[in-house]
Length: 389
Image (cartoon, rainbow, N blue to C red; front, side, top):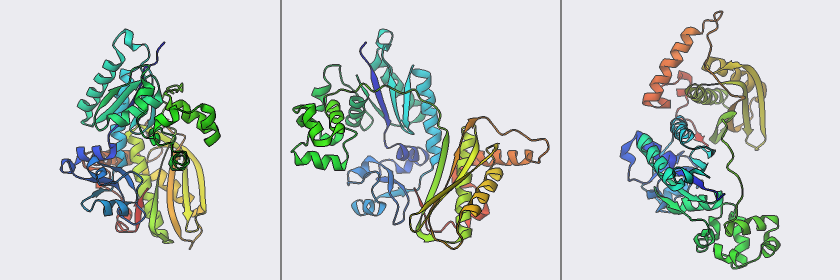
């Protein structure tokens, strides 16, 4: 049976969500990320890309390329919220899907031609996602994951594409060789030494010749260049952990500041847990010192999504892990062994009022943003040298 594989990608997802929350950003060059020397661009608008701004680029460089660039810190809880909505829509609409990131999916629509028409189904799904979320989305349909992913890149922004069976090589041929997902900078440099700059250059070679240049990865690149990819769409399963960390612009040994950051990170992740109706049973703290040595310590705890319980565990881990006086470059936390469920009231503990407080706080955050309400200790260092990774 002929495979029908769709690749879906939300266009400039973080920026698109920020524009939903603040329409004044529409049509302007925008980048999501931090503002300090070590910050990088997490996502950028197409208006910013016209100036050469790209994801993972140092923010200082991005500002030089585009002096009018608007930098937004970002709100991961909002991105998670919209990703969850889109995932639910896809889960309701297709028989098999794979979620590879917060804003990227593969759908296996093989066999749906008999009933709906794969391209028609994908088109209707794209319209539904846009109508229900207001977010732009692009997709491509072909016989495999590689061709569909490359096709989505060619369909952007906010477009769609169908590469018919048998026309994969023809579609790929004129494109730059770096369009193949596994061709990075080092591989590109090697290929350019052999005057290989376009996918059609690889198509003219044998698999053995490519193996001679790049080893076994050369064979894989040759297959992809010729439109061959038999990798399956892997059914999506819920993630088992969530994490957050911060890098400091200037390394610090200020214990009060370090604890303040940890509490802020904990608040953000517990808010995320409650939004997703999940509990955690394992907490870990990560510290990277100024010499780049990194240490992590974890602790198993009763299932919870309450700030107070998790902050207490995080503090214990920090005090047992941190070497007093040593400067930190990065600090982070991870909640793992997640499970579906909501916080249960313990009749022998006075946490009923706490739960009501968290519910009220979550409502405020849902309406006005994650940073709209926080503990006093976390605001004392609001002007500190923090960078969001």
